[in-house]
Image (tube, rainbow, N blue to C red; front, top):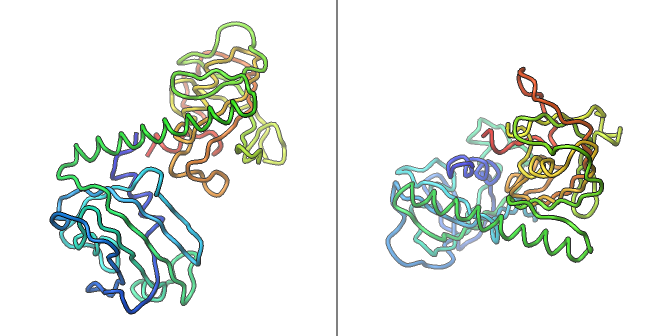
Length: 308
């Protein structure tokens, strides 16, 4: 599982830029605009504290990232803060505070020797809204809280998938990990187990039926069977978990909560953050795993989280 630091790095890469203006806004030393909306209680955040916060980023009137109702972001407060960066504002906040932070694309470009940030043009503005949920004084406690947030999000998504399956009248079994498997054809012989290599045909889609990858549909540019070695974490957790329920020749539909898939990151533009997925799979063969290095997996099933 990712640590707090690695998660916040991914989230922060998304929310790095912001812009807005207004007479009620104050400025940091570097010129970053901010406005504290509500006053929390207790002392201001101190260097070395770990802060848990919800964040929403709006760019060109479009929300590009939103953790409200999902897994909050976590970060450590440093003693200085980076210029023209949200870390400048955190030491001004208390637990319970809400704040709007804004940046100008023009100002960022000026600091980067005229280079405009990706996706932005002159005059663009992005707004970051933050709510400080909790403050921790040590890393271990913060990490435990982050792990619990992961657990709660997974439980919520499992219930969402279960509700969807019941509403469609689908007969599916739930694995111990939380993947739902609708067996179409069970196959024959032993099921895939740890250390075995599974050769599989698959089609991945969203819950609204939109395909994002397939080695059955030639329009996706690859039709060779996918080979997955069970237990090597080369594929997303829910995909491997589902394959373990099927024998050679078997066909099934896998209904995968996002936290067993791509979770808070998503996968490029094809798979959104926190998007639950469906895979239609057919196991062509189950063999002993080769001794050579593991094969490269296509993006649709590659485990992009466990290798961070």
